[in-house]
Image (cartoon, rainbow, N blue to C red; front, side, top):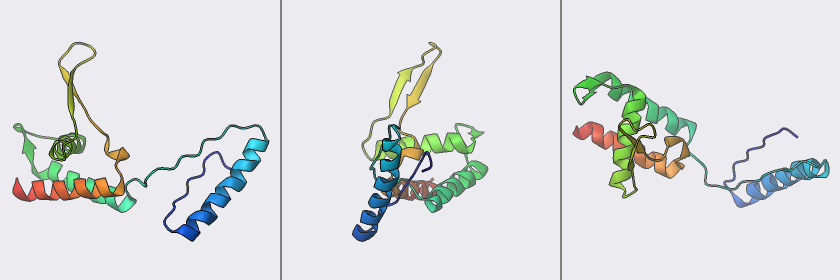
Length: 132
C-alpha cells in the first residue's frame, strides 16, 4: 500500500467497491502495526473549477485596479473571496496583527471550498466583474 489513498465516491455500487478496496489496503497496514486515518468529506472543487477561478482572477488582475493600483491575482482572490463570504452571511474577521503593526483579515481559504461553494464563488466573481 502507498502512504496515501484518495478515493472519490459518486454512486452506491462504485462507492461500496472503493470502500472495500480501502479496507483491503488498510487491513494490511494495520496488521503491520501502522496507525492509519480514514476521512470522509464532501468533494472539494474540481480541477476545471480551479482553472476557471484562476482564469477569472488573472483577467481581473490584468485589467482592473483597486484602491488606485493594479493588484496581483492573490490579492484579488482575497478581496473577492472576502466579499463573497460576507454576501453569503459568513464571517470575515478583522484582527489586530500579531506583531502589533496594523490589522489582518482572516477568512476561509479557497482550497477548502466544496464544488458547490466554488461554483457559487465563480458565479459571484463573474457577476462582480460584469457589474463593476
